[in-house]
Length: 550
Image (cartoon, rainbow, N blue to C red; front, side, top):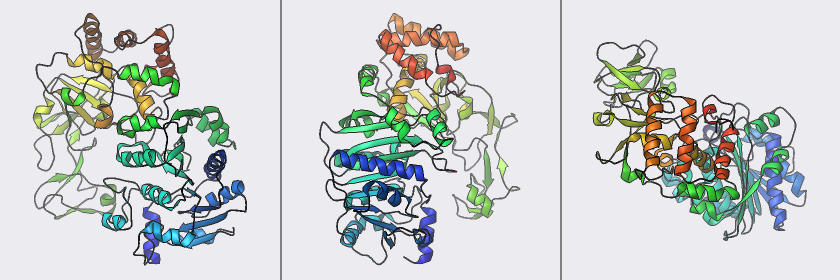
């Protein structure tokens, strides 16, 4: 790899160097877990060492008896280290002029690694071809993946048996795209720690941070994982003080059996679920519908909320554009390949809040509320190049679920309006389906189902890019319809809310739904308590319930 290519790799990988307190947290977690099993740490490697902050932190705990190694593609960064570490200027993933598999090459260089600590690059930019990576021995490269996945797999293959690694990685670990990585860790390692720290831990980086510590040892039925979530208030306190993250970790950590992760759908790391909540969640999940058999799932028009497009001068096709293409001033037509000018003067808007001839109503994400639809947008119809999707999906009634945002927002459209791609559409597979949509609307918007979502997926605070997926929606436990008197009462109140929202009716409906799920008073209070501990955000404040309201 040339110097120029190395610099591109560092930039595209999304390299951000590690704050000292975070480095010390990752290092102390590594030290604690190794000490708990009396594992002697003879050598520590950071395969993305940068300025060696993590190696310096590790040295504080493992002292000078261990050997310290580092690898990085950024020559200037590693030149700044004043410690006596053995640093290799190279690419960890595909070393220069190396034809053998990457892990074998580095094992020959370092002759035994008992601990690895790293804050690897987080970028989703693909620097190497999938073929190159597979030839180098990497197996977790199918589909979408972030660059940190490569470093985690490399760490596993470099470690001595019984060794430990501590990684600082993004919260995309919990996303659908990383199911394969979660299964890899769950099946091949003992996951000792999963600590979700949220956003702002890195200055000017709007992605949430997680620290994981694993041991290269087959898990057993009794393997325990220490789980931790830094709350919004705790993070504010941490960022405005000089407190260690361990001040918060020691107070909030709880233990779960690792095998639970492998039993979860998509091997979900549900670190917010405490062991004493598992019975309640099992009760909520019982007798749930099969979403695939019940609903047709779709998305709306493939266009942004702003509706800004450019038209190809050759074929006339309309299409969106990226910020980078606007900055460059041009793009290639997705239909015919011709060059299109992308400038402020060439951009046109096909979506408006004002209706004009040839425009039809369209709902975008911000229109969808819990039970209701607010605001109006309109889109020009029949424009070549815009994918309006199958028009039959828009026929009413249809259940709408907002894709992005905090909380579950579901409503029913009775008008036949189009929707944008940021709104999911659910319609019955069987037009003679026994239960009306209002029944599913009620349960989907309920605090019971939101409680399950919070515990399963941990999205309990605002973040830069929160969104639902079909996989998440289809995992939500909607109790089967029985056409009982209770079911009919749920439908009645939900129908009233769908036409006019009232908080008191919302709370009344919740009590009916809790009865539907067979919850005890203590279990209801667990759910209300979880709602009331949510951050003070307008998007979710109406989920909170005062005792006197109940």
